[in-house]
Image 1: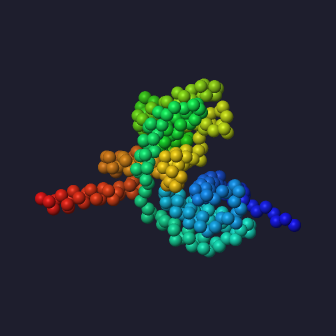
Image 2: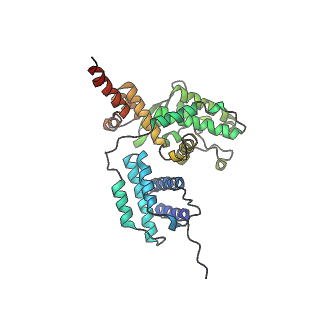
Image 3: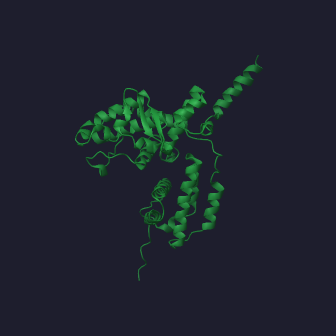
Length: 332
């Protein structure tokens, strides 16, 4: 009798998420799905093809890859994503789908996960600026494919908006055309904690959005919907067809990942996320103004202690400060 075809990693993931969807709340399911989707991206970076690889190919080393890649997220998001992955391994063991050393996996997570409140926001600022610079000159190339041109205009306006507003990825994806006050360069949004906030846009992000929407005008005009009700950032993939559909947070993360790979290389995927742009924004405000209260208001942090995490100095700044304070004085 032939051996049955082994179940793939992808099928196990889909089955696991189905159990989560049935047993947990919608918000929990979305969080777990986001965590597991990121887990899949990490596996892909390490050349593990989840669609074809049997579940038996998933080793404990994947846990180490995953925990290492999560350092770009906040400690709270890291814990949520690790909980989702831990649940996945519990599921594999309970269903006897593969040999799982649960005690070792839990030990790896305990050893490598950060403790709450111990992490300073870290992000590769130079690489983010490299992405921004590429975006600013993106449309200088010659396009032969109109849809590619439209997507690039959208991606440019989306990434510049993240960099210059500090919007969270779901907040940016939820924006509608009617939310923007084009004269004032502002928008009123419903932010974290269901709180109404004012977000300010830079002139370069506004220009990029206008160019994108101008190119999208024929599609918007044929939608038979009021323009203010249309999403500011829309999907332009095969699944959207001729309709104007809002981007999802997954689309937003994929846009960042795709441009990180194009500009910085495949090895950089996972080191920059949409939230990295928020860290970049807050740090720019704080370092250029020196005003902690201003940074708090623009970042929309309820507690100023959250903003204070950004008030750390880089090694370059410490070197410069030491040189000015000590070395130059020693020459006098």
